[in-house]
Image (cartoon, rainbow, N blue to C red; front, side):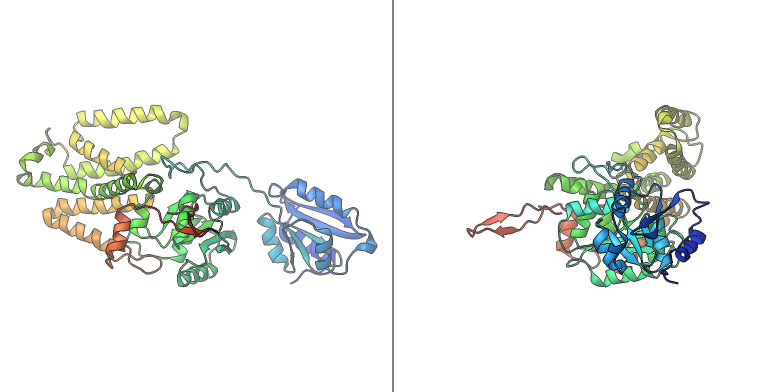
Length: 484
């Protein structure tokens, strides 16, 4: 079906499809333009009222003899607003209306006029709670797609920057933006991602980017290491685009999905680049050391406790001083789950009660649990370090991947002693080695395949690259445009 020249027939179709009598927020206005009947449809709350008011006021001055013969001529003469389009498919018009685009139907024209004067309810672009930095930009992505693309455009003023818009979800029609620089992106990967999104057959992206990630890359469930990097910082997203990566923005999601991403990309943070090279290198190496401690600290301690004869004299203090009433493996596993319970409780705790409840939880679960005999103080100490160290990773997915591997190594160490510890360690390494990025390349590049120059860049923060720009007098001038 296409838009008919008869306004009554078109209105009858949209009345049955949109049900404005039942949907109070879908509004239509019947007006006269140049002696012809016309109808304007818009969604209350998604439209700039002052823009529509000015358009309607301008229509009152149109005389019948001034009405053009075609819709295209009418749009050029009497629709001065910038974002105007013509559409013949009524279902497309309905989908655009529900996304906030108003449309106008005029009797005698077989095309509808789309008027994009959208405005969305949105919060401020304040710094995200998770991806905070000690120095640097204090803005962050929000749930509005247009705002997020504007934050990236503000940082990259390159005409080769592309912002492709796609849609997914038969019911939700969720907007998806592919952001990349045409001259730097891997075109094969870009085409593959674009085709996968276009071929999606889902009712709705109920979980935003996670739903999209599971659809475009159905990875093996038993490998918990993340295939994507997520960031709520526009400066991180812009830097990734400049490096040739692809950024996927999903409407209603305040974060960017960066791909392809290796383990070294996921471990990186913005603070590495907001400080001088020496400080940035220290922060990066510290984070990598904490990465390994988070995974191996409690399993190695459990291994030593099961084999006290292996403990050297200078490490004798790590032995449990008090009597053990509950097996160490059960203490560690209970604390692993208890910490997740406290984390979930903290998320759902009202902000005004967070401080007093945190004090109560610290006293009861800390001091009294040791005095009662359930836990030993050494177990509490090491688990407290592991819990805090987990937050040195900006990626929640990586933190939980380390947690799953740690629990597996703990169980194997308890049942099979040294052989179990070695088996758990080997399994964790294999999960990293045999993992693949969405581009099909090594997850631990540049270790496999080994590239010393690239590995050096991953481990040590060097000076930012800069170019010399030739001036009229022939002397070089440093380019002011920064980059990673």
